[in-house]
Image (cartoon, rainbow, N blue to C red):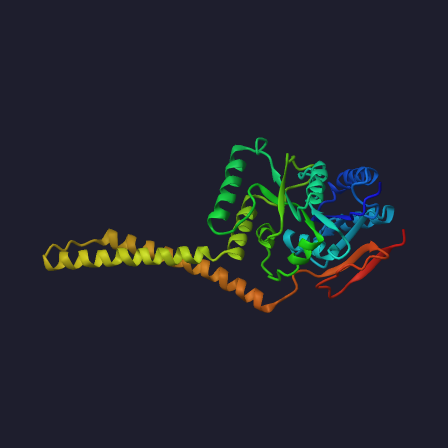
Length: 337
């Protein structure tokens, strides 16, 4: 029996010409099976979001769309980063889908887990998180840094799902609620859990990248973590406040100690401790100013209220009335199929 659940897959792409042929082949195969089994409707779609790629990614998406209406495309006017590209795809399809599943183009996310995600949705879950079942295939260094990353995020007040990236299912209801979050500094891994609808988890084995190079080396992951912490939590500023109180308390003790030494004529020149104190307090001051500056910078960006992305072209179906939000220049190419 034909299902009436319209699924849209949203796949952000940045210089993915090496992996797109295999990704599209596997998606076409998966969609065909889901449609034939009556799990999703025949007008379900896979939407590739080109995040300002410098290679032939968009040309390949265009060609896929011409060959098969299953594939659609959203082209951003320039590179805006993975999170903004993902949001652009989700917000574009939110009015035409019953459910959207986001995944990366590199095939590290398990396409086979889509079946269980859809089952969880049918059982009432509005958001289903894809969570890695283990990290046994990672190197000891990568496993250690990843675990430290999640612990750091949670300790700093960013409430994220452990071992979850951006492989998730969201119902149209959840997408509408997500659209209410208008911040420019975007960290979806922390924002989506804030929505508060019924959630569930699907465990899957994460594979090695099929082809191409990773878009998230160590330094970029650290930057991403810091972005997430400062976007979701003010705990770092509170840590600075606590550190300031601690240093002030220590300075009072040192002051009392110094006065006692002075009035008992036991003063000893302390060049080393003086220099160390100056450098330590100076370093802490610079770090504190840097953290506070990061928050001020985010306030600066938020007050400008600039669009998070601009869609320059959309390849879609003729009858779909999609949400082309934050569009300044838009050329829509519709399929008549």
